Structure formats: structure tokens, C-alpha cells
Length: 265
Image: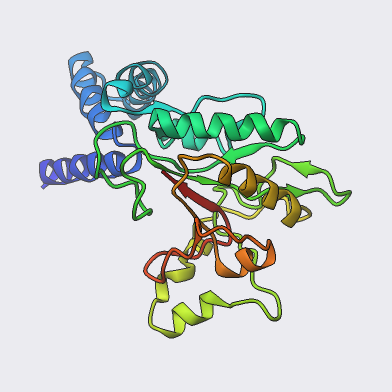
């Protein structure tokens, strides 16, 4: 029975780490092999070994191998960074070179306006069609989520977010705006606002959504000829007066997009 529990635990751990980070399961198996060769019994040694190997793989090995699969990590600059370091640590920061260039050009333009691009989940480093949960389409290096731009109580743009994950704190419709969430949920799509349970904690409650700065971000994106689509909620398209047909509704089968911007080539 003890052996069965151990095997089951290993299978579940491998599966969880693979789905969460793509490479975590493989690193876990490698760390287990080394751990058994060391003939140690302490759990702290086991997980410390895994952590060290995982960081080496994530920070040094994967960025070197990923270009052979057509992916590169998002290149950071002063005003282009992840909203949370977890995005990089979980290997969710990989895009095609074309999308990386689009982000660089957008950030370069926004720098003149003293604005930043803060990104959330992009894609994993290897293989098309490998799911990046809980997203439906982040599986080919051609998609990435961007944070809205928020301002402090004195009106200054900030890189802070309203949740630890960067997701799940919505900018809901105002009176007279399209309430797509209610429409989707009334049509049976109960999952539409499930992201509210993925915040991992709400923070920075004093900052506010900046319609003007977020519009500037989207307009800078729309200038990029390679851009194919932007997904945000219909009420925000109305509020920001965005006329481009590249700004679209993502469909009720997805989840609501009034907590982030989805872009894709």
C-alpha cells in the first residue's frame, strides 16, 4: 500500500508540474533519480534539489533551447516587464520572434508617453498545441495577455496590479454599456466569470483603471501591422471608443476580458 501511494503521488506531482510549467515534470523525475542516488531521507533535501534544478533549467537551459522551437522569452526593457515574476518562473513568457518584436515596438512608442507594457501569460517554450491552462488558445507562441494600465489616487500611471495573479479583478460595465457577462451567463455559459477565483488575493485597492492610458496602449498595439486580433469586453471597446475591427469579442465559450487584454498575431 505504501508503494502504491508513493507511485500515485509521483504520477500526480509529475502531471501537475507538467501542466503548470511544461518542464516541471521532467525536472521532477530527474531530481528524483539524483535524490535516490544520494540515498538521503530528508524531504527538505528532495525539494531543495528539485528547486535548484528547476531554476537552472528555467533560467539558463530553456531560454537557450526554445529558439529551436520557434519561441523566445519576452525581451524585457525599462517599460516592458511581467506583471508578476511567476510568469517567468513558470515558463509562461515565451512568444514567437514576431510577437516579441511587436511588443518591443509597442513599448518603444509608449516610452515617449511615459507608459509601460506589463504582460501576463504568454505561451510555453516548446511545441504547438501544448495547453497552457486555464487558457484555451495560448498554445502556439502567437498570443499574450497584457495588463490594463492603472493610475494612483493622484492620477499617475503605475505598474501595480489589482490582484496577485494579475487576473480576476474586473472593470465592469457602467450604465448604458453592453453587459456581455450577463448575456453569456444567461445563455448557460456559467464559466464566463470564473477568473474572479484566480486572483490569489486582491491588492492595491486604491489604484483605478485608466481608460485614457489603456486606450493609448491599445492604439499603440493597433499600429503594429502584424497584429491580428485584440480581445477585450464589448463594454470596454465602447467606453474607449475603439473603432478598429481588430478589437473583437472573444465569445461566450471563453472567460470575460475586462481584467486584461488578449492580443495575438
